[in-house]
Amino acid sequence: MDAKGASRIIGLFALAATGIVALPLICGFFARLHPAFDSLAHFRIHLAVFLLIAAIPLLFLRGFRWNGVMAAALGTGAILSVVGISNLVGPGASQAALQPEDETAAVYKLLHLNLRYDNPEHGKVLSLIGRLMPDVITLNEVSPAWAEKTALLAGSYRNRVVCHIHNHAGGVAILSLRPFADGDEGQCLEGGTFATAKLDIGGYPVEFGAMHLDWPWPFDQADQIEALAPLLGAMGDSAILAGDLNATPWSASSARVAEAGGMTAFGPSQPTWLYRRLPEYLRFAGLPIDRVFAKGDVDILSVETLEAVGSDHLPVLVEFSVIPEEGEPRPQSATAWLTGTPSTGAAIR
Image (cartoon, rainbow, N blue to C red; front, side, top):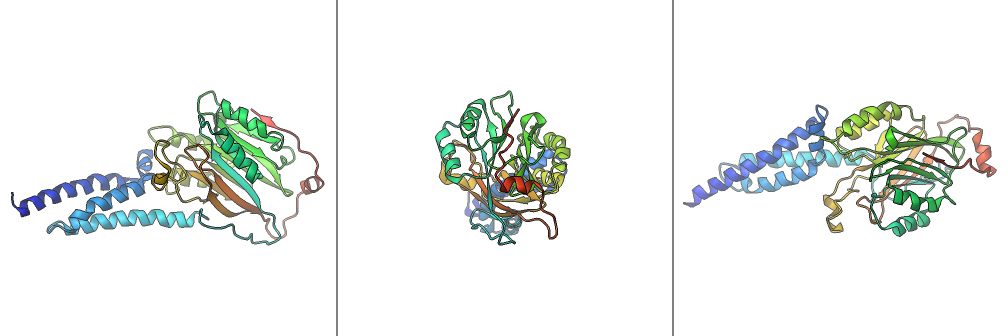
């Protein structure tokens, strides 16, 4: 076989490879049409990188260069679509905490973490919490073993909602240093995969949600979001929602959650999940599926990932302030908070 024939065979193989990769990549842009397309959308960057690699030989082979250019343009455009969204969904890990719009406003911390139900590194997690002492903690995969360990925090985090699920993965939980807002005790919803608690944050009622979505299609994520939609819509005027969405920021699932709650999505934009058998230096190949949403008087200042603590998910630290609209009266509960009135205790379901 001469060089021309060999080049043609290589070109045909490369062309077939670009077609195989381009098809699911393009389908992912139609994620709103069917959950199957949304599942493909989660891997948009991975598919785009493979497409760019497959396009390289086409760019150097006569008769295939135009195909290579088209494939490279599609791959580049797909990556830029993700980078653009990441830049629009709020502060990322590289950003330091910003000053609140009102410089007199207090800054609070929320720590979110999918514990991983079988994570044996209990000490690392408890040490992280003890070091940061976040005002609010939202947890996913609170298995029986983790429920026992987090009970050790009850002395400080007396205000708590712990949702139990009768399977190995465990439910969600909200732990708070701040007292419940008047008349609220928190609640577990949707079988323990969604918890809410209205807390008194410096005298202002802010509703917090902890959510753990199922895996995407062919699993039940789309149906779960449909069931959660009215619950998300019923959250308070000022709210923060954090959770493992098992969905990327550019997916239809993430958009549906934001729309249902009337919230704005925030970072982190870099991967928070990595398959647990892969080494940490491949973190860049993971997915950013732990998300934060907020609305109302909540001012998100920064969202960053922290060091690994044994889970396949990284902890996410959120700094925020509560800045009411101009002229909005300060609630009566501020007096109770400022005078140190003790909280009402814990709600465990």
